[in-house]
Image (cartoon, rainbow over all chains, first blue to last red; front, side, top):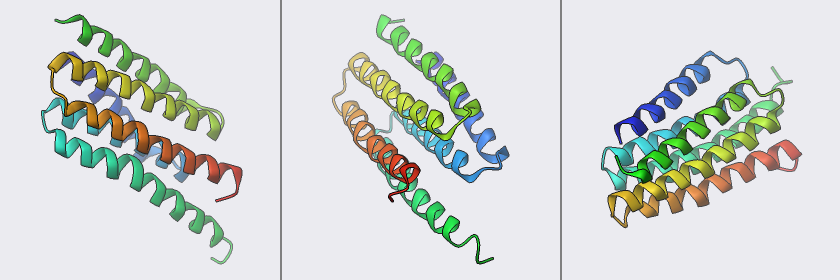
Amino acid sequence: MNNLAIFIALIMFLGAVWTVLTEDVFKAIVIFGIVSLMSSVMFLLMQAPDVAITEAAIGSGITTALFIFTYKKMEERKDER
Amino acid sequence: MNSLIIVSIFYILLALALSYRVFKGPSAVDRVVAADSIDLLTVVALVLFSVFSKRAIYLDIALTIAILGFIGTLLISKYLEGKL
């Protein structure tokens, strides 16, 4: 179980660093979804299932949808600036 | 260590190998398909962990990820198609 947590933390670390360092916003949205998913698994390994359910619902579902809608709006208004 | 945990670690290693394709993928479609595959591998690893720890509430998290990850992938695909 500890080895499982180590590999999940490795994916979370690489994804978080790449999310900060990348310049394209679309790549950052896709990788942020993976980081949120892995943090949900990490909450489960720390034996907090209710927090893990909430994180999976909000982080993996609603946040990705909201960011995609915002990215669409941002692209539409790019030529105004 | 139980064999279920070993198989679960193997699935997380496969997710680590897929995350290379997410980071270095040439096009956006590669990244989205690899992210959806990571979702599915995580669901399988969570089901194995639920069987290992013998608690039924852990299975609900796998169900939630399997449903809502699909919705996120669907929205990104509709955006890439241009019909959002």
